[in-house]
Structure formats: structure tokens, C-alpha cells
Amino acid sequence: MSAPANTVEEAVHAALATVDDPEIRRPITDLGMVRSVAVGDGGAARITVLLTVAGCPMRDRLRTDITAAVAAVPGITGVEIEFGVMTPEQRKELQTTLRGGAGAEPVIPFAQPGSRTRVYAVASGKGGVGKSSVTVNLAAALAARGMSVGVIDADIYGHSVPRMLGATERPTQVEDMIMPPQAHGVKVISIGMFTAGNAAVVWRGPMLHRALQQFLADVYWGDLDVLLLDLPPGTGDVAISLAQLLPNAEILVVTTPQTAAAEVAERAGAIAMQTHQRLVGVVENMSWLELPTGERMEVFGSGGGATVAESLTRLVGAPVPLLGQIPLDTRVREAGDAGQPIVLTEPAAPAAAALAAVADRLAVRRESLLGKPLGLRPAAR
Image 1 (cartoon, rainbow, N blue to C red):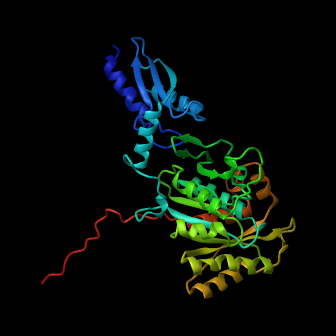
Image 2: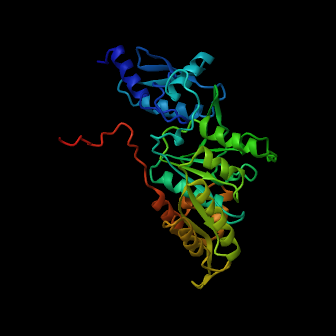
Image 3: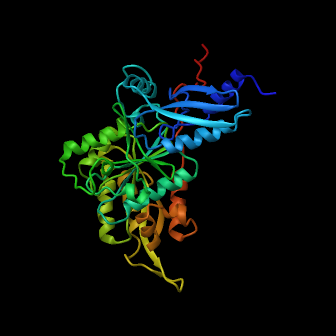
């Protein structure tokens, strides 16, 4: 004897509540995306789902997830899904829901007192030290540990993160909110996602500031554990804007062992003295090349990372550790070109293991004290 139709429909609704929107990472039932559910006498479920935009890149993913969830409901013999599109009013209501109330203006969530997101700004004094490779692999390694991770490609002129992370989708616009695409479990945004082909970006300082501000406030990031920013080399406009927009960001300095690179990296780290940001540590990249004989060839010299860490420790008067030394390995470059971070494709490789060890040291969730009782009591008189 089959279950009553209304009971089956309730079970289907419950199953749909377990399906998250792939971009927003919240149940589609909470987002107003389920327009109707009907179950026929033979057990065939007909479901109408409203997409945020007509060309939603996640349509196929949603179809797969919804079909799997509903097909598991007892009494369901088939699943038919029809996709519609939200009206402007419904999109506005969704935006209000995500931003936490009517009239809520875009704010930078990571700069709010209750934020639990650790923000790491990956900086270098000069280009060519592998800063983007380090950023991408740290992001992938942290996401593989079950953390919610976002990456902002803040190197507006030399953006490379989308390719190295394998992020091929374009952002989705919902009213004036931007839904970032994901790759390997990492949400990512880059100016390269808004330009045609490989077009150059020719902007002055104020435009760079506004781009970073939009990436932080207009993009819907959700509840991140970690946000990584791949900064441009040096101590220019973006570094200054970062200090203004995210004063709580922690600086991670990337250098090579080369003395000249180390000296420039010290200047990149020293900006923290002026911006009052914390230096979380130093990563030495391309530390050595391991030869087939097992010997190490120090292609770029040695000691640069330790020198930078020691110099910055003296400068800021607080410990600035050398978080790791990453060997030079052609597979890191090959993996980046293929959009498959080496920490995921070849985790046993020495470079991948070193990057994963750095990620372990950064994988600390920040718990907010907002709303938590501290157990304080007035002193007895």
C-alpha cells in the first residue's frame, strides 16, 4: 500500500531541504528557489525550481543533486525537474535574505567586529617569487581540510589565480551581488573574470581601490573560515587599500633564498609597521632543487627566508616565523598551468608536502566572541 500523497510530498520537501545551491551553499528551500512540488499517483515527482538567472552555470549540478535527493524518498518512482527564472522582485528578496534584512547596504563582512574569518594577505617585494603558486596551493590545501576558503586575486594587473586554480566559470550576478565561481572547493574572484580574453587592465590607483572594495563587499562569500588575497608585488596602491579596507588582515610574506629578493621582501613585510597589521610569517619558495642523486642544488642561494623572518622579527618586536621552505619542482608549475594544484594532484611530492605543512600552521579557525557570555560577575560589596 503506497503512502498518502501529502505525506510523500512532505518527504520530498524535506529531501529538497538537504540540497544546497552550489554557489550560495544554502538550502534551495531557504532561498525561495523551489516553486512547486507535485507527486502523481504513480509516484512521479514533478518539481519546479527557480534559477537566479537564466544562464545559471550550475543548472546541471542542481539537476543532479535534486534528482539524487528526491529519488531516495520512499514511494518516488521518477523525478521530473522544470527550471524557471526568478523575477526581479524575487531576486531582490533573495538579496535581502542573504544580506540580512531589508535596506542592508553592502559592507565588508571580514572587517566587522564579529567576523570569524582569518584573512591572509600574501605579499612579496618583487614578482617572480611564486606568490600566486603559494596562494593557490594554500587555498586548495585548506579547503581539502574541510575549511570554507575564498581567494581574491588582488593582483589586478597580473592576475593569474583563475588559471592556476582551474576556475573557468564566470561569476553570476544577482541584482547587485556577485556570486563567485568555485574550483576545488575554493570560492574565487578575479578581475580576469570580467575582462574579454587576455585584455590588459590599465587603471590608476582609485580604480584599483574600488575593484578591491567591490571584491570584498559586493561578492557574496558566505561564512568563510579563511580568505586569502594574492597581492601584487611591492608596497603600492593595493597594499595601502588593503590596510584601509581590512585592517585586521595578516601579512604572509613570500620570498626566494636569493639575497636580492630577500632584501625586497623585507620592505614588503615592513609595510605592516605603518599599517599596524600583523605579520603571520614568511614562506621561502624555490628553496632548492632536489637532484636525482638525492643532493640539493641551491639554485637561488640559501638563507633568504630565515634572513627575512629574523629581520622582520627585530623590526616589529614580535616573532615572525619562517613557516616553511618550498623546494623548486617543475611539477608545481605544470600543475598550476593545468589548473590542478599540486597539493591535490601529487600530495606526496616534497613541494606539496611543504605547502601542506604551511597550510596546517594557518588552519586555525577564528571564533567570534559576539553574543557569547564571558562569565563576568560584579564584585561583591
